[in-house]
Image 1 (cartoon, one colour):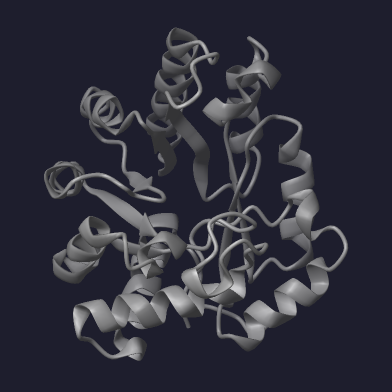
Image 2 (cartoon, rainbow, N blue to C red; image 1 turned 135 degrees about the horizontal axis):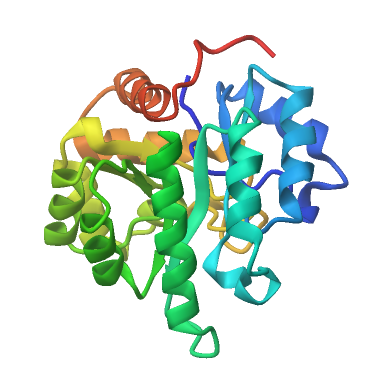
Length: 259
């Protein structure tokens, strides 16, 4: 049973058929999902959603760099109180995004550093976003020893991947690996140590090659699993078991239920 280590199930793209999406995930064997937040407004929504399926859905709370304009100066303090009194499995989604030039990079750095410090204080892993900012993300993580987590939707080099593993970080692999043009990513996935590999959907975004242009959903982690297993020359059941064990170890998830 693969774990979807990163899915925005609270997104409005799922408002019309969220129950059916969950049923399809369950039917596909994806029975544990980690749901990261993007801003403070999403925290109560995610908590309420995860409470409906407590053995299947697990919340992470954080402040995403792409939503910088929606964050308030006191949000990190509020995040500290929120996580200290909740069932959070991680601080996330946090990180840096230098793709959009109109997002203040220094303010992003401040939120990122403060959330990393909070994660260390609370003993929680982090879920990290790094778009056109991976090198700086790695350098920042090095300045926060003791923090572990995952860089989701990894798209860096083999050397950057090795540096993350040396820091104890995992990499999240989703739909992009199924595209033939993703040759560098496919080489990394084929040869990397299995203990650092997580599967994810990042739904509703980043669908696999077979569903290009469509809304993504967690059931399609099965397609990512199929591709990863083929690249590694391993049985799907073995990759599913190994990556699920990695997710449960990182996020301290319980044994999967039968929701």
